[in-house]
Length: 249
Image 1 (cartoon, one colour):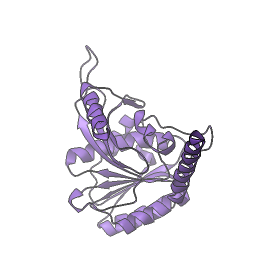
Image 2 (image 1 turned 90 degrees about the horizontal axis):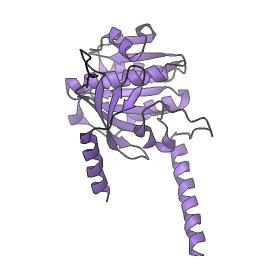
Image 3 (image 1 turned 90 degrees about the vertical axis):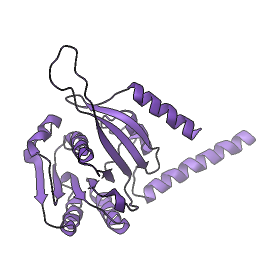
Image 4 (image 1 turned 180 degrees about the vertical axis):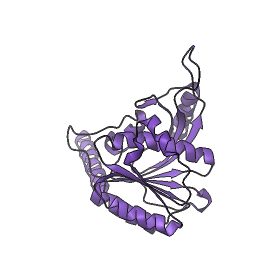
């Protein structure tokens, strides 16, 4: 009898979690059609084990190195999101991204639409309008800050169009609550060369998921291995994992 009651409670809890995701605009993938984008263990922390495309992702880029690392990491995501067609709009008041560098991540610069404007107000307006265009694969916006109401408007736009939105927030001192599905912090890490090979190794980052709606935050080491992401298990990564287990326990 007790076993039956426990099973019933578990089913009710699972159904409630699914309903909450739907109310928040997160639609579960159709059976057998979950499209993973190659982020390894990172994807497992998201609802359904799939990177949410119909969502707003927020990247904290206070320091220049965080901004540069985020640009590279997002470029890797764009190579997957744009694989089936569609362009990407990148809006900023002070863009430093070198378009030709996107080729490192298999993103054709001629499929990028860069809009360099004078004010944050213009960035927000263009971002919202671009996110409503279902012909795009993604929209990237560089902003000092964004309010809860402004982020909610962007989330409503992506829920209708299915376009993925990336917000690069430059000023964490003014950080406010947003409806972003995930908050990321990308930090550069030293590369590792193949034995006997000169030059630099593949781009490598420490990926901190600071917030995941209905998921579990965590830290990872990721590398762009020429054609795709690859999760790297380092001694430091193992230490992080053990520390997180202790905190949870």
